[in-house]
Image 1 (spheres, helix red, strand yellow):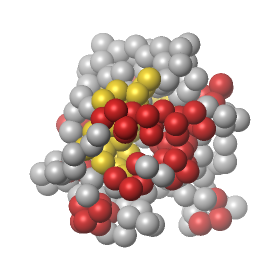
Image 2: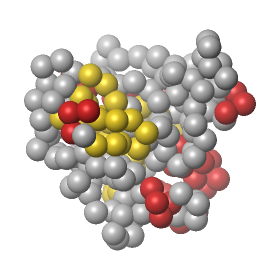
Image 3: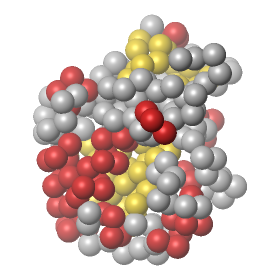
Image 4: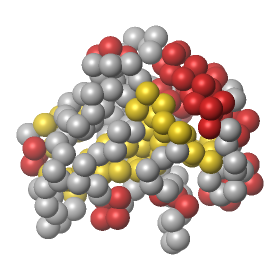
Length: 220
């Protein structure tokens, strides 16, 4: 896995979770002063939560998009079949059982909440996204109309299309355990596009190619 040179590319990194004495791979990690422990536990695998035994991905149409759930499930399964060939798959997110794809997601997209806006980098807000037990889904795929994607991201072609969807907290440290991926209907049908963004959402690839990442002052 390539190491990010940018302080704002927060996926695909190894973060030490001090309160849990654990290492979380591929997650946004933030402090939540005065936080309490979740009932689930953070783990060092790419599944991120102890309650998960396999990779789960859900897909749901939002903002007026009607998704053919059976077709969408097959499209995501096809893309996951390519993701499983990634060199880091076995060491990262393989789990003990084959991946599953769920029809419908257990929570609504964070970026479509009232008052929430895309900030150009995946941060999230554990104060409102915290869960006591992680859902079965490591990635939530939200299918939006193209015009809604533009409204949310500005230029969807250059935007980082992922945002934390769920956090687990241990003490004052909260770590992302589920990621929202935002796509248009035609992109859901594009197996190459979907494979690339699933790799990024899972931390198997950097969100921004290394050559495009801005330099951090003083770092070489």
